[in-house]
Length: 163
Image 1: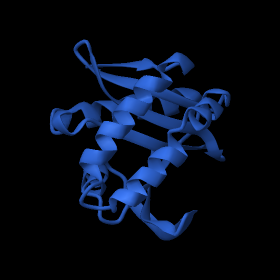
Image 2: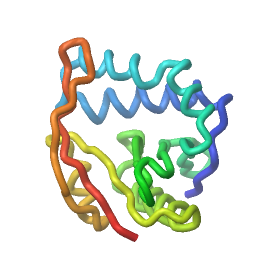
Image 3: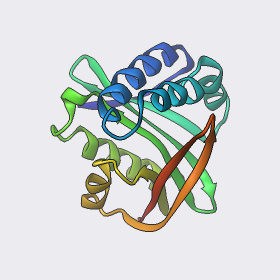
């Protein structure tokens, strides 16, 4: 297990990992049309490039041996002293092997080193990952329904962890 900083030339790999993980992990939560829409909206080359162009937003690849099996994307100083975890995805077949916990520990260490003291994230109310985040010390502090366009919404709980 290792985590490496992703760079702009990794965009095709991030897109591939997003496609595979989203289709497997969200098929029972979101309709196929919303998955297609969100993948196009959030993982286009232009959208990902915008993130790479921002100093506070970074992506890291999650490796199992020599194979990239997921990624984590987060934004430092999203709010004062707060990092927002925007994305953490693993291939379906890699879940349950400690990679998610490993990635969150990496995030927490990175956030502490940066000087932030809080991590926030949104997770779909129906996503089993909500239980995973709870097991890692994240607590629900709010919930919201967010219009993302094209007639779709994200119906999420907002979670946080203080470091």
